[in-house]
Picture 1 (spheres, rainbow, N blue to C red):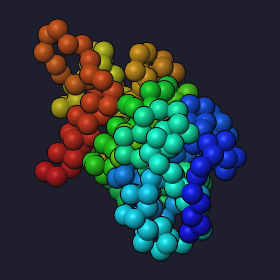
Picture 2 (cartoon, rainbow, N blue to C red):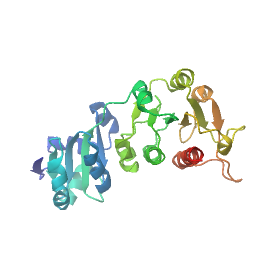
Picture 3 (tube, one colour):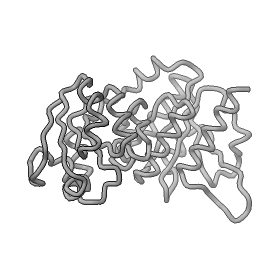
Picture 4 (cartoon, rainbow, N blue to C red):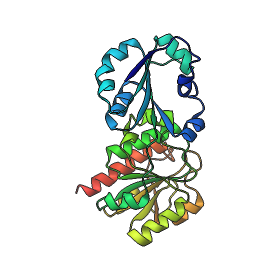
Length: 270
């Protein structure tokens, strides 16, 4: 642990914190930002390589043992809360953030090899809202999803707001970035016998509660506005919807994912 008291907001070492509103730069650099006490604590406990922490003197006293015992040589920047907020460019409620390296992505082959049957995977198509993505990752962790397959048109679950809304669940969730989601779904069916089930609010023939979710499956969720793209939908084995009362045609994708995954667990615990 290397402690540096910050007095100058232009310190070049603080660049990752000053560029929070430019997430593509972070992704290109292979880094992500964690913010908030619980998320930073879970990051330090995760074993992921933490590069630096930016916090107030009060948090330093709380985290001194966690930081000194971490296996990585962490650069610790200490500054008053107002100075921290001037660096990051917005009000920081808890006064603690961290920068870490994005872990090496899991491969689909490795994921399949270490995931016992019946498999449960989640795939996302065109999902770009970081808050929804973070909640979906948290739901995946809560209901025992073995891995997240990120389609080529979806955002990274390591965006700052996604990490925050996952409450750190992304630190332990295997993430497989894909270059062709539709082809991957066809591969899962033909090679591994894993059915793909589209969470499609306008599915005409299927109710979620009548679908067979006890066997290995991959639940596919689409974008917030457009849903699942036609090409990916065609690659799925089945499209089902959550039955709802009249006047409500769909749920937010984060809410829908909780309903779908809870139903998988219910069926498998019979």
